Image 1 (cartoon, rainbow, N blue to C red):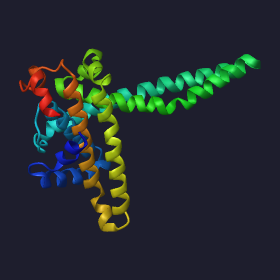
Image 2: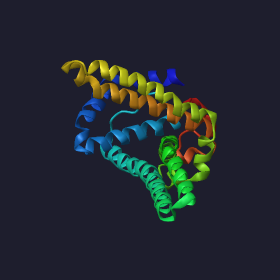
Image 3: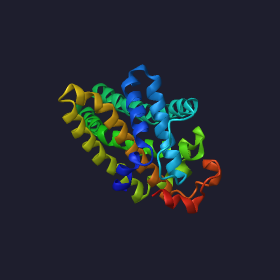
Image 4: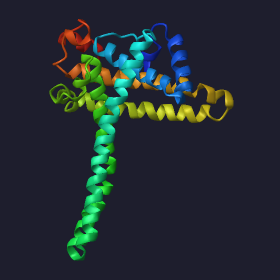
Length: 236
């Protein structure tokens, strides 16, 4: 999976894609280009689940923008809502501890501390769920698919998906090292967005491959008539 992901961005006419992706990365502070990049990554998921082995081109920019906006909404929904709920629970426990006082208050305070320490696992759960949600959206082309428990469950509970979530950490470390080296010079610093785009495409390839390999609910209608369950294995 790692080898497939790392080789994926440079298949086909890759130079033009990396250049466009890097330029969009430079301009992502303007927000609109950032949405386009997200849309492209969603398209990577879509084509990977559909069995394509070559990255998509930067075509139909309006569609990329739309996919990027929807993908961002999905990411925010999966990120902000759990974090806010978590913060509310911690605040309530902490407030209760102060109000009760005494031994009971101290005990509640300890629970509050344990909840605070659980923030890292909460973030990991968010990180674990978001790629599956985006893959489900890419597979079906419907926003509701990102929140379809029945569609997400086979991927989230699979070993393949767990590996696909952990492998990108390796890619991220490699990207960080390369970025740090490049940032040492002005010329190298200019190359950072291109390296980051390469890493993003590789990571989303892994996510899409894992989702496709384990989810037997994706059918031909979800990707414009391409594939079916039997074809999903070709994406891995």
